[in-house]
Length: 433
Ligand SMILES: Nc1nc2c(ncn2[C@@H]2O[C@H](COP(=O)(O)OP(=O)(O)OP(=O)(O)O)[C@@H](O)[C@H]2O)c(=O)[nH]1
Ligand SMILES: [Mg+2]
Image (cartoon, rainbow, N blue to C red; front, side, top):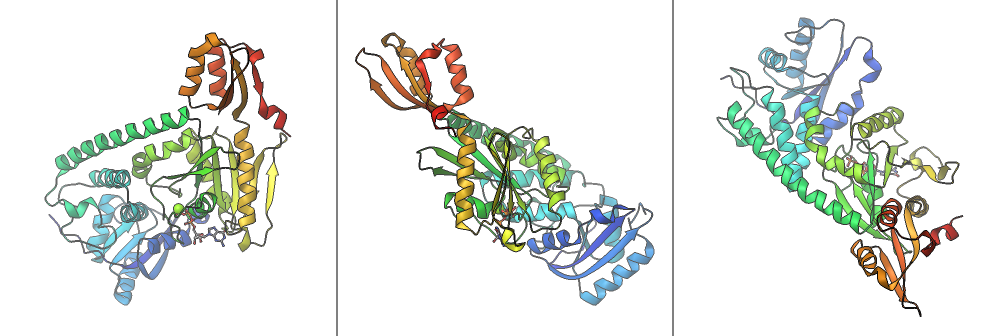
């Protein structure tokens, strides 16, 4: 087995452009990712690839330039913006006597540093092992003996003499544990549906301000930081509104272009939470010059997750940085479809909260139902669903129940129990503008 060069924190970034996709490569983002992983960026090299060198990806001249750069800066690690296959990685390391890492591996490293919850750790480990298993080739190992350094955190350091079989066993085990966690999660999702609490998922590109907004909306304390992927685990918190409704907000892991597919697969169940929400707040950093591209990317992931039909409010955040004022854009039916806010402005938060409530209310049946004495079973059913707000017994012995529950669910109930429509009165119709 060959020993790979040791890792460290002193990093040279290798920005590789291919063909005409120059505008697609984001130098600044790679820099931010490296910093977020705890790197000290000591140099940057830019390469415009005209033809691909399958053995090394880059040409001999550029290898020489890199060698010089490593010497000048005492770099311990090189991070490539373009994906490296395992043989390119091995060949470059041999030539340069320096550890190589690509963008996907860097993102995996950040995730492994951030994972806190049991599930998050399982998911990251699964993603890392899947990545590793594609790289376990004869005469080359990624399973490291020494600790520390970017790209070395996680399962690799724990498992000495591990081979493909052990890795695969562990993958199987992780998948099983994750399935169990997932089962527990869908139970609590069911409970939420029963009690008709609406979940609002806060999604968006990494660093858009999701956790900041989540904290302001719910007066919580989620970690916020000017770094990429500050949040990994979906965090949920309730907000009791003045009208005594409960809204659950879910803060989620940020998206990034070309997220390693191992990560999307591993985090799929966490992200699926989004699919079951009533409303999506799509947070966009309006001060980022690439925000439009980010927005489109986030929407494409939502499509992948089957969550693109869920009502959305686009929240353009950080308007304080671009000198814009608060604003709402509405559909023809008066529902908010976009908002321009600064998460730091309490007034903006208040107005956004109102818009959210208004949007959710339309999905809620709020009214009364009059049940005869003979309809005890239907009455019990409504209590079971957690839909009853209050109850009065009328002089004829019938029940007048005040109901608050999801509209569709209520329709289903009425159909199934063959309730006479005349006994239903919808309060929200009277309240509607
Ligand atoms: N100027 C300005 N900065 C903001 C605003 N909202 C958030 N920020 C800053 O943006 C940075 C990122 O905020 P977070 O809330 O951690 O972003 P996030 O979307 O949760 O990021 P990840 O969890 O890493 O995906 C922090 O430094 C925030 O203080 C805003 O309205 N204006
Ligand atoms: Mg966050």
